[in-house]
Image (tube, rainbow, N blue to C red):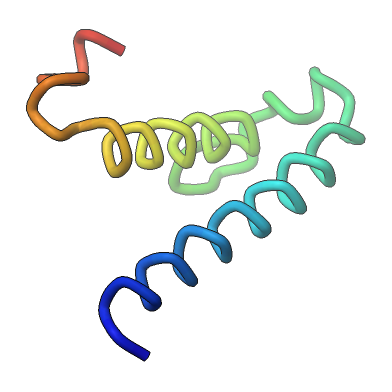
Length: 72
């Protein structure tokens, strides 16, 4: 597998896992999703927010789209 194929595979995998994770979380009531569970990002909602921001930084921060987190 060359570099381009590897990056494409990683992007497809990320997309598939995000879809599964967001689908599973969509079935959790809002109050429960936002409840502090003592996890690193406190709640499932906090973890979802972290995943969203890391995806945005990873895929959009080419120097032109997002220059710092305050723009998000």
